[in-house]
Image 1 (spheres, rainbow, N blue to C red):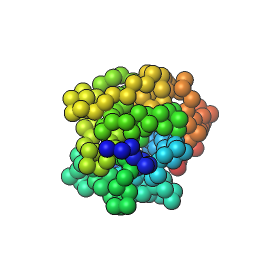
Image 2 (cartoon, one colour; image 1 turned 180 degrees about the vertical axis):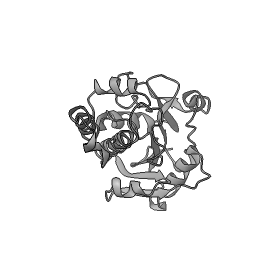
Image 3 (cartoon, helix red, strand yellow; image 1 turned 135 degrees about the vertical axis):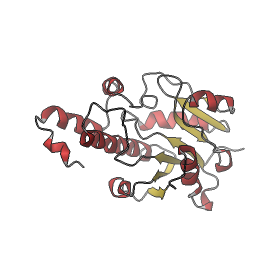
Length: 223
């Protein structure tokens, strides 16, 4: 199979009220602000990546459509019965048929230090094989799964997803651990670690506002 002429990137995003519950030490409005900021930074980095044609946001929360607006961002509603992987397949399938020569990549929405050149490097590797994945910094999860065609796009996100992707024949893309594409944020320790890599504008702004706000009132109504 020939390499894709371009890529569609699918971002699965939870409902704002349920996102990042493991950051339970933070007030819910602060968690929400961080979730939105990280998603915006990921979306900006993806759209700036050479070779990416479009972002497809899959979510059951219609508020994301107003929060991530761009002519190159398509929004697809997932079904309440969808698993994460079902939702990803639903989003990928929403691309019209003229894009049949495009590759499809699924990316998590909590990579606030993602850089367009890192993603471009990973997609270049992915274009040389049927399916490929990028493990998270811990090594057991997955931050990106890519397939050269929709028919091969069968992501297996979830517990031990790196092992599942590897067992299914996907090639692991080896990037340094201290890379924005591998550093997702699930805990406060993750958030501290990812700051050293250089945060995207939106996430950096939220954290700066939080540090400088004695009452957190500036974030209570954000965004």
